[in-house]
Amino acid sequence: MPLVKAKIRVGHSPDPDDAFMFYAIAHGKIKTDGITFSHVIEDIESLNQRAFKAELEVTAVSAFTFFQVADKYALMPCGASLGDNYGPVLVSTRSMYSKELQGKKIAVPGLHTTATLALRLFLPAFETVVVPFDQVLEAVKSGKADAGLIIHEGQLTYEKLGFKKVADLGEWFYEMTRLPLPLGVDVIRKNLGRDVMRKTTRLLRDSIVYGLKNRKEALAYAMKFGRGIEENTADEFVGMYVNDYTVDMGKKGKDGLLALQKAAVKDGILSKSAKIEFVDM
Image (cartoon, rainbow, N blue to C red; front, side, top):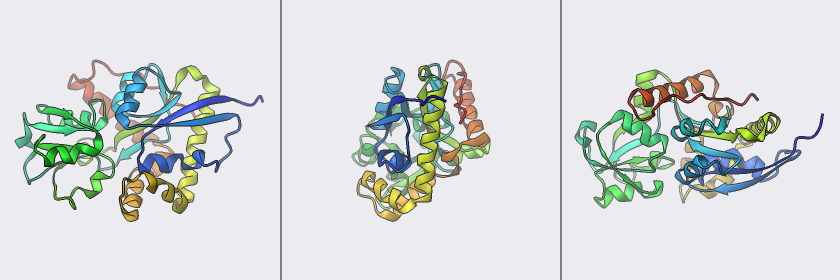
């Protein structure tokens, strides 16, 4: 059988969970026979914008964005970040009911993020204030926004910084569906061909498995992307979003993805359901 060769640019975010997943590939811990990887590290909203133009061969994207680029990209069943009864957190400087935020300004980490989609499903009427994900809390603190939607490790640190939870959108989605909320997914361009798609997907899965089996060394690398958070916080965050679902999202993960898309279509946020192609590992 001929060696499958390809040069693959991988887009992922500068966050502990993504760094953990790609550690083995980035540091030559697994053999990538014939596949050469280079890494493009940008925030998730920038990667979403690249995906609309199909710039990268492989990239992390928000599930919300994937629904809109599914004609160009296939979904890798590994590499997904799913919140199983937890997810993006809506916070404010004071305790309040979510209904108090109707029509108010809410800082969000990008219009194409799954977090913002979930918020639109949860709270239909609000004014978006788009800021980089790591400036959401500052936007709330300064009064630029009445509340903020936090993703990444901010989900674990907001209380220490004096903010109050209004709602956890992962909890809300689970209450509605009894399914995990798919936040970020890894996708691969369909025009690479079946053999390259399958081999690249297996290599990503192997990289994730290596990290889980060699947690201490992978976590040490991931810590470099933690923006100064403590090791135990980074470990907890990685545990939330790099787990069995990340190795293979399985039926529950796929059902969660379809349920999210169905809700977005029902509410008129998406015009139609996309046909989703999964890469066969």
